[in-house]
Length: 357
Image (cartoon, rainbow, N blue to C red):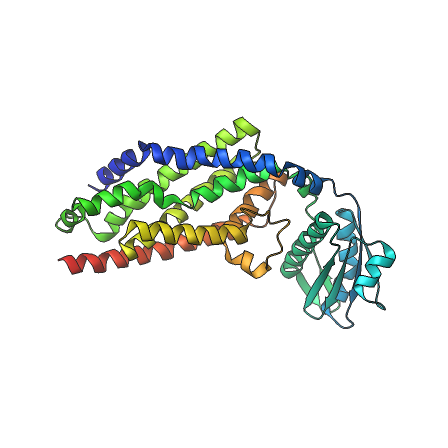
C-alpha cells in the first residue's frame, strides 16, 4: 500500500506542468537575468589585483600569535599587510594609499574599508572570514604556539557570475519544494481523502512517507534538470558531480520536510506557502542568494544561521576549486532539518487524526 501511494503521488507531481516550470525552467530564466546583470561586477571582483592592507594589534591578544601566519596567508591571496600601531586607521589609509585597515582587538577585529574601492573591501572581508574559520579550527599547542593550516581561497578568482548565479538560484528554488505537492495536498483536503486514510491500515509515519518521499524525488529530479539546463545554456560549472549530487539530494529532502511541517501544522496551503516563502526569502537574503556572500556585509552569525548559506558556499566553492569546508555543515544542517521537521509533521498529523476519529 505504501509503495502504491508513493508511486501514485510521484506520478501526479511529475506530470504537473507547474512543477516543471517552477523547478526546471524558472531557475534558468532567473539565472540568465542575473548572470547578465552582474557579469561586470563579478569580473571586477575577479580582477581586483594586489592589495595593500594595514593593521594594528592590541598587545597581549591572541592575534599576536597568528600575526606571521596572517602575513603569509595574505601573500598567497595577493594581500600585503603592513603593521601600524601609532595612528588612527582612517589616517593610515589616506597616508599610505591602503586598500583597507584591520584593527585587531582582544577577541575581535574591525575592518575599515575604502568607500571608493568596494570590491577590494569585500575581498578583504572574505579573506578575514576564511582566516578566522581556519584559526577557530586550528590546534593550539600552547599560548605561544598556534599552528594554523591556512590556504586562502585564491580559487575565488575563478568565480564569475555564470557559475555563482547559475548555482545559487537552482538551490534557492529547490527550497520552495512544497509547491510541488500543493495540488495533491489541496485535493486530499477538498475531496475528503484524508478521512479515508483514517480507516486504512496505514500508520501516520507511512502516510507521511507517502507524501515526503515522492515530493523529495520529484523536486530532486527537477533541480537536477535545472542544473543540466544551466550547464548547457550558460556553461555553469558544478564541480565534483558526486558532491553536487549528494548535496542536491539531502537539500531537496530537507526542503520537502520543511514545507510538509508547515502544512501539517497549519492544514492550510495558502498559509503554508506564505510561511515557506517568507522563511526561504529570509534565509536566501542572509545566505547569498541575492547578494553574493563574498560581497555581503551581513553579520557572520546571521549567515551561519541560514541553511542556504551553508549550501551555497559548499556548492560554489567545491565547484570553483574542488575543495570547501562547508559540505559537512551543509549536510548536517539539512539532516537536522529533515529529522526535526519530520517528527513535528508526524506528531501534528497524528493529533489531527485522533481529533477526527
